Length: 446
Image (cartoon, rainbow, N blue to C red; front, side):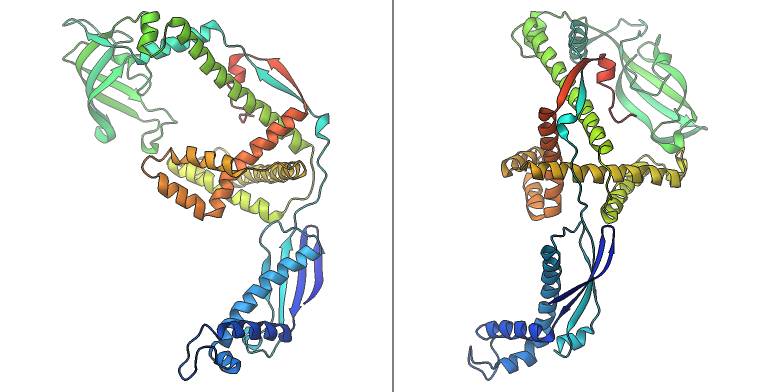
């Protein structure tokens, strides 16, 4: 095998590889010899078929397989001998006449275009300092959460005949809506329960039912909001004819030991402790999200190196495909967005570059510190995923076990979290008390 580097530009490399016809012929002879005991040809006893006869019968087919294997093996070997790591699958361009090579009349010559993984030094992690936002769980949050639980369990009793509906009452209604005098899909329902003041319906709908009575009717006029998910209805005025079948008022619930027992806990103290623990867990998760985002920002800012264009392009296409899918799901298109398509593409390309850069940095940290994902961790993640598809668990397991790409996607977030945990243990992280609103805000909003 002869390897010649014919181009080098940044992370791009191009090699010309030549495999002598004699080497291919030797491999063909070895392969044909192994076939002698496995083929049955008329006129020959098993194992007695001459190689030359096998060459005529199977030579072109076997040589095709040998060429394919040789191209893959020699390309990989050329990179390994030079300690080069490919960022994406190398591009192969066979230069020889394939028929001539198959017939043994020509050497095998091909070009390998490959994009390399960048070499870089990870910043000194011990120099990093972060603030971790934290918030205490107050009695007010616990009380509010318990009230929400009680509201979910709330029972109702019918109001007296002619008694008017108030905010907080539950109505059973039939309704039919029209836009421009015409009925529309999803604008009709029967025997629907609606709690006034819950905000379940279009803004303005529930308010107009306050003061109605059982067995009565009402006409409700509303305007669909501009962000309504059905594009044909956004911003349009609609008129609903509403029949009020029943009006029921909420039965007051005492928050006491008896209530705690109804939700399966020993007493009110145990209920408060359980609710406080759940809220604290939510706060801890939010705190970690903010801290992780801050760490990734620091790692992104601290590293500047050439990125493999192929990896960035693949990541960008994945992001852009998701953007288009989300728009389609909302019944919108790129033209409906505030920014131009070019501006959006530039914005999402920056996100793709950030993801690729951080992926390479986290991979380097993980490799240098022997961080890996165990089969047990993968198994737990797969079990959690499979439980989301009751009755289809077997198909989920089989899909991931047979699809290396899907398994890699399952592994990636586990690996990322393990590397993040490793770095957070290593660096200086100081707690900073913030408001609950700040803590529960989306760290990606900026």
